[in-house]
Image (cartoon, rainbow, N blue to C red; front, side, top):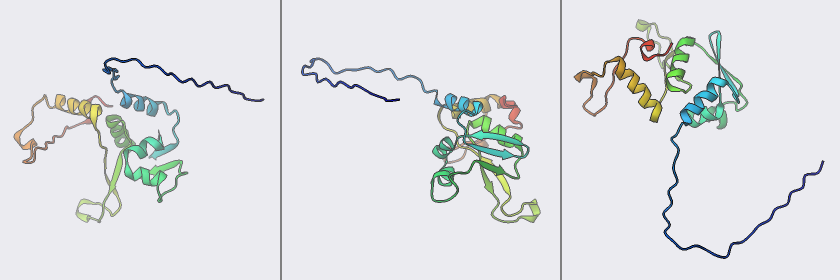
Length: 177
């Protein structure tokens, strides 16, 4: 089988004078929704997170784009770029799944630096997981949280530096099961 191509290049020697006002409509961004659909479908996934008995498919490029830790692990000098499976220990699958659903991203876990016997925490034990949300997803999450709080925050929810925080009792109040 032979592939042949024919290309023609033309040069335009005239030009039209007139105002240079161009209006190009920018479509609304739905990239977050597109990434969620990609994650939900598993299409193109190249890594699997094993959390307890459950597995979660993900995409290394998306993880690396959102996290310098994953970037170094998959494409940097440390870690294994051929890694296909990550075993996540000391985290219950529902915790992992809720954060993934809330943010549309894979959670990052923090480990204890020291053993604290009074709290029953061992060194290097996973004690927290977190995600960073921005843009439209952050607005949706904030809206859901404020709705649960009936759009009322107390004075103590605000810091002197302009930051604020609040908690909710159950993630199911946000509409996530």
